[in-house]
Length: 190
Image (tube, rainbow, N blue to C red; front, side):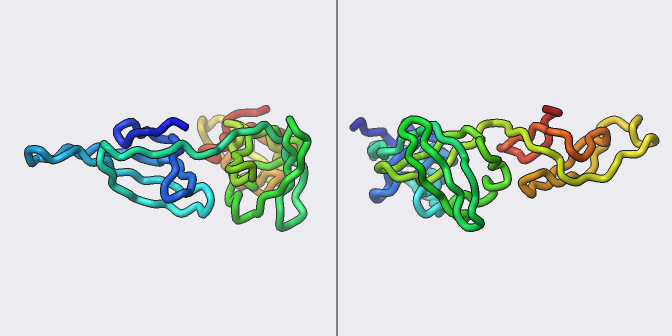
């Protein structure tokens, strides 16, 4: 297994810290002012198992192992209220993640949604959603005729998964909209 030097760290890189897989959220290289002192690497990272955010400082000479994390194609099947069930599209193996593990990602899950699952040592630990998902508007106020001319005006809407977004005034109940999974904002009509 290849080792990654602290001076090679970049955002979204996966490394092993204290035998736990972590994803690097932010990296800052601090050059020392004293002669002979080595450059320090300040990092902010998230533990993929516990979801804890850590801030650590390393010397550039320190090395880290790559964690045994693999991405697999999966589909969302259903939710039973507490757990969210998925199926690995390659092995057809079914598994579940809890609402606590998924946090706000649950608002983008629709039956049949194709996504990636992160597996650590063969066990599912997290999902990676596609950039956009298409969801049906379940509730919104009608936009008035007088409002139609005001460019960029929005109104609140609730989508089929319970996600609340702001949509343009011309969007009606029952329409399908594309929502960004990274920002949680309306992107376009589907």
